[in-house]
Length: 189
Length: 280
View 1 (cartoon, each protein chain N blue to C red):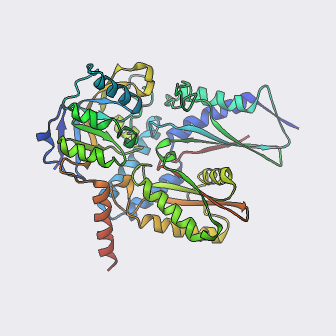
View 2 (view 1 turned 90 degrees about the horizontal axis):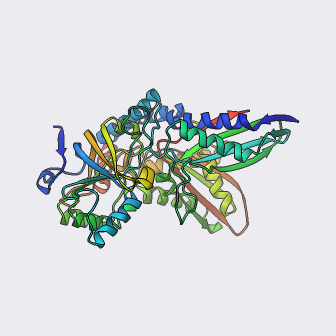
View 3 (view 1 turned 135 degrees about the vertical axis):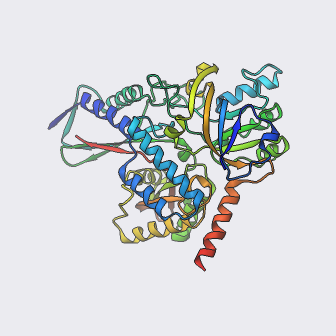
């Protein structure tokens, strides 16, 4: 069965999603990398308004390549997520519900994902030309000076992701490897 | 003395940076296809399928296969009977990078100062390694290196007595710690010997090899095969989702070293291992 999500999302939408599920996301999502995260968290600390509504939002960790001709965006695969770990708990507390990136998260982030009923997805790292096809529009909404790292509002249709850390505390990077190794061991017998 | 015009170097580098980002090398693509056939774990096989599809889309539409179009690493081999005219080699290479990243709609990912971090906006400078060789030809290898995998690379000064087991443990530990982060399936470049910087350079240089090409020394060829098997027994799999295909290849390069040392460097490259060569 094809699992889909429409943004904005809430914890109720996520409760049936488990690690390893392929999910297709549609609606608006926001891009941010380390430099933008640092600025967002500073705004929260100063009690100021963020450049987008973070309640129920999904952030995509990406710095796309430049758009050519009539394309809305260039190639747009995920960047490695651990660089955002130090900022993520504060964003989750402010209402962020979903993150798309690639690679392992810190234990603190994983705990906060459970605590806040949120979710962490991976998009396929390096599959940037494939992912580009599901992005229908892109608009810079903040920090234009950051270039590729500016915050963009993307409209996506059936954006393909895989659940890595679900709201129950499971982790595909541990579970997937373990299950494969058990299976491989059985094949050897 | 044969003369090479600096403009020719610029023109070729410009072409190579674009081609390297659009077209995954055939040997890497074939290796991915073989791995997919061999991969019986469904999520792993599907993931490899998407990576192969991505390479096809990038090639057909001439867009970068990965948004991280890298920092350009250039290996320039200069025949000692060549004289470059109308400018410096370094300026010519950087001009090629500048033009190629603009014309190819490639991402500009370089910051001028590592701490101040202001983007140079043209992806220059490249990291250029020169080598002077006999003859009157010039070879340029252009390799845009993404930092997802570069960040997972490590170097260690082992004790000589740690020997082959120490080397193997360090390689396996590095791949294991990296896990899903460097976009597996990866290509693992290993440099053994020399000095601190020589080991790192050997590891990088080994990544320029075709994936079907093993070390010319049968001892190291065996070590490459053994390490590949042990890496693929870790179960990390494509993208770290679990599976057999964690690495496509291990390449080892060595150099004589000091009686007191055993430097080992591991330079990881993602599945989008990009390099293009021209001989002038």
